[in-house]
Length: 200
Image (cartoon, rainbow, N blue to C red; front, top):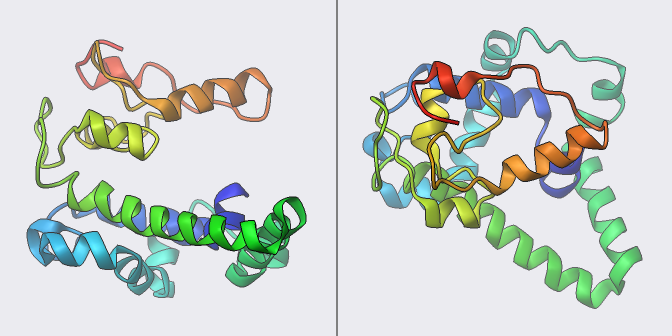
């Protein structure tokens, strides 16, 4: 829900794009490969590349078929502007329109550039401890809540923890652990890190 309110992303569409990226990583069918499309295009136009696949009903049907639309999706989550509208109303209610405007601009720039960097930087430069074309960049992981450990993510695609080796830091994992302790989330799989051949 937080992502829907802060970005307007429809959950099933996001899943479909993400899964297609993993199915065809760094090939011509990858929705956002900097190897194929170039660094600048992925870094600065990643949201547009994402939307191209997200708008394709066949892609959503194929890559998110295990997530059929439920009543909440039809009522709320399949309506991007409803989510963004609620997010803006919440910002204005909490901070007033002036500060809300500044927060919205900062968030939009962070979202567009950070999301682009996950794929643009995360498939061009950095360490490759596992045999895939993605890379690990700890400095990027700090900026994008763990996603900079992108080589690890491609090695253990179903793991909610991106830090797979000693010394790697995944701020997103801290958030997930907190949500689990508060009983706001559950983990579907555990031990994925060891399956990838790394020390958790």
